[in-house]
Image (tube, rainbow, N blue to C red):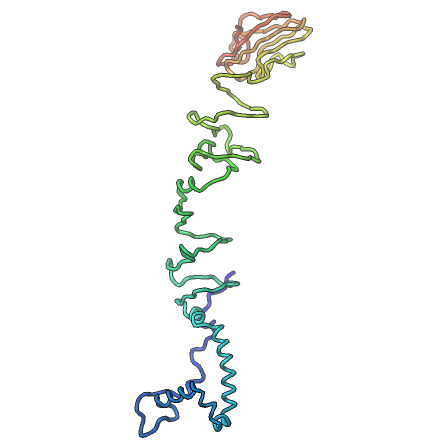
Length: 334
């Protein structure tokens, strides 16, 4: 957790120094012929002292060297220390640490132990258009009023136009029909180059694969297509295995939902009271190859899956009958 922001007292910078100048310089004429007092020295005299110092005359005076040599040596050593301090604590760094309005041209933050908070709201930038940061890592929440994503502004509601422009990749789950999602996400085009998992809608019997005016072209399946109702203009091949040869019947209601031709090869007579199928218009051809007769039990009650008629029909060996299912799922003999 970040600590409390640093205060002025935390900087350990004293407002008042213990020592003051040795003297002050003055350009005002002093009393009498005095050029200096215990606190003040004439500017002209100080200028001459500076000129002598710059010329190095103090090093040529044997008397001065004898009296003040040790002091001159100490001040020479202090000069090196002061240079080191100056290099470490530059004016800009000092101002930046003490004055919040100062600007640091360059710097390095190794470890930040407290929050970085500007003193004014909505005024300062982090980087610029010509000097951008590289990556931004945020583990919490980024509170951004406006987001410019590679030249496109995305407002707080994440407008649809921006999403269409920048969202790419595959869908891992479907929240609406595939046709609607693809159209909204990328202007009507998407590429599923490799699907590693099943594509499953979130709600049963609600979402479409394509639309009446935006149809897919070819459908290739290596497994089984489980379709409740099939609507096709033409069928190049039968939808299901065309012929099934039955050696026996488990029930008098025979399931023909996946076949077009039923071959019966049974040595004893059998009864058939109806056929199970969910496709109106389904046609089934019955061929009796066995020695036992196949009796079609008919009814006029109009129950689904029954064979309509007032009298039963017997299909002898090598005879063929054909039936068709109506829209109310009743079979009629052709």
